[in-house]
Image (cartoon, rainbow, N blue to C red):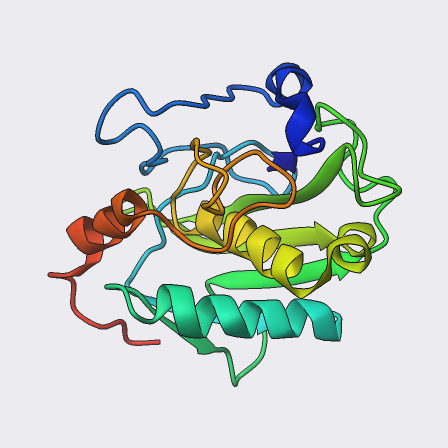
Length: 214
């Protein structure tokens, strides 16, 4: 989940975001692992995807969001041990990540530490959640990433890529980390890259994995 205020009020962010850790404590500090509650309004912190081929479905998203996810998939995911694809068959059980946007006002607000943004500059900008765990290994079979259109309208292409990188990063198993140049930061807008440490997590988990059968 991304519940953020502008960069110059990170002290407030620490109060708003449950379990926020600004500085990694060890090599696995920003890796979410294979556990978490299941449900679109539950806090998972992100879970590792069930295979190295990640299939995305775009649920009637804006052109800004489409452009941003194209950039994230092409420039940030595909050069790593993971590979991303568009789910040509539509939303099926094999879809790994479903992307949503809208002018949210009330979705999951009973669960969130702050209401959805109404201006793109404060409160909840986006969230990611696992909706189906794989029983055999506890990894996530399908996740949903949501970004508010208020945010997408406020920050322009670079900001859109940063937030998309951030929420998709959660679906790939990454948690928040420090460093405003990188997208898993809690700053607004986020940076537009995964750290070398993030990419090492991908490699450690996927470089020896076979391709999926999706």
